[in-house]
Length: 408
Image (cartoon, rainbow, N blue to C red):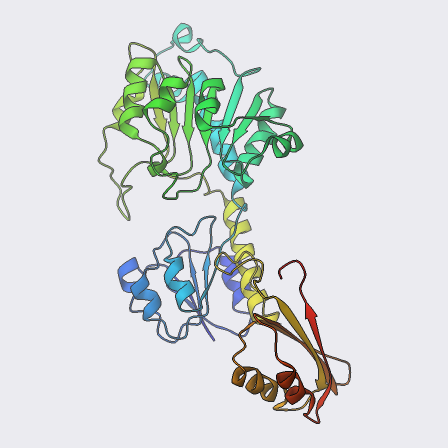
């Protein structure tokens, strides 16, 4: 099977992948457009930031698995992959420590205005009075929008630094928040109103796109700190700009709208806001580096190898995102049989003739390879005639039909 790595991946992971029964092709220079015509005879695809379009998927007749060497899968047309029976997996949580570190790096930099103080010294000035002005962060409330792996890591480290973390996400319940040892907000509005610092760790979906807007910034207290190391499209940046100028909002961002791809320049006026406004608001930014530590990249690459090894050697896909969860099957047929060629095929032929849909299959071979046990989860109850046909095969030892009470 051929594996195509279409983005940069840690060299150690590439070496490990070459030890597997794979023909490994490493072409990180591919673009989203050239990828569409580069997937012939490719069975496994690894990408990081590169888009995988419907056209690419439809041109990839032999593709079985797409691994996103990162957290989200928004750059992959998951719907198209599902339609073609292609697994999509990711590496959730592996970059959480790196993103958390940048969140707090931006927080400290904003409170102490570290970048400006360094620039002042480099210019030969000694402005101790100016840069000695800082509020400090101990005892302040940090609101965490999105309490996944990164949000939880932020909360853990916030407590160690003397901050009071509170969280909000659509799936976060008060009980779960209590288990995590953090406060709970019932809405983003409530979270903003209670936060001295608001940090975003939400996935980008149709529901979250643009959800942090003018109302959110108005609910934050004066001179609050806002940090976005998640996705630019979560935020109305025009509203954010107004809050910097008129409400003293202090901002740290790692993502900007329309980020340049493969370029060294960026055209945005956001970074003209680095000088404090009359209200004291300003903005610091970094060029989308939150997950880019060596530790994070190695962790993600190691997880990528684990997913591919499991797929090849165990037939399972860790972290798969596009497989239906609990089966809707109502019955399970358990068939003990001789482990002979064609036995299971004969069983399937009978089931097909009786119009029964099989949703899940597992088959276990016993020591000595003389017998096996197949477990078939099926959508409807087979008739006695169907069961009689299956039992009539000489190779079939026994057939049981089990009703699945939790799904029936």
